[in-house]
Image (cartoon, rainbow, N blue to C red; front, side, top):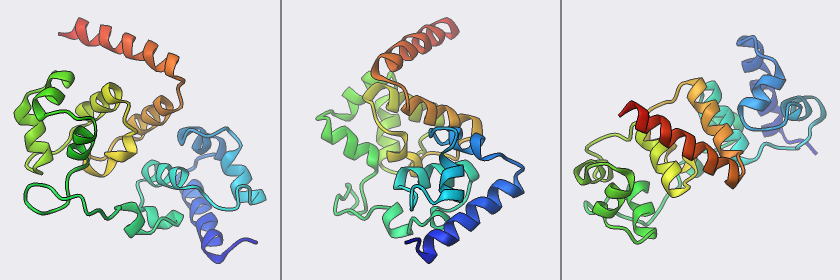
Length: 188
């Protein structure tokens, strides 16, 4: 049984695709799904509802709020009892660093960044730029969605690249990491 919420999601998605002059296959591939995913969702009702990752990927791709695809804000910004130094919510970068058992100095060294940069981001005094976001994701095998709310908006091309990167096998990721490292060395 299709719910009213999913009917509204389908209507909104179809409208976005039509307004932007896109085809369903392009949108499917842009969010890391097979070419028929959106067509099946819209026309056949399969899957019956969008999963969290697909909905978030669509929201990012179309630059709209996740609520449009059935993700409520309170589930999008996951509440946590994990507090930082100032008593507010801890930045996810700090949580990731602590889970890995790293000091800010160790994380900075692994990322080839200054310790002050990591401290400033965790304290909310500096923003997480796209280059550092990609470096963190590559180095620590972090899903970009875990930090997406703290990074500046990505261009559609950058978003597609992140989605494609997540779909790579571990071997393909290692090959890509090696290639990117050699490119970075050439530029330096």
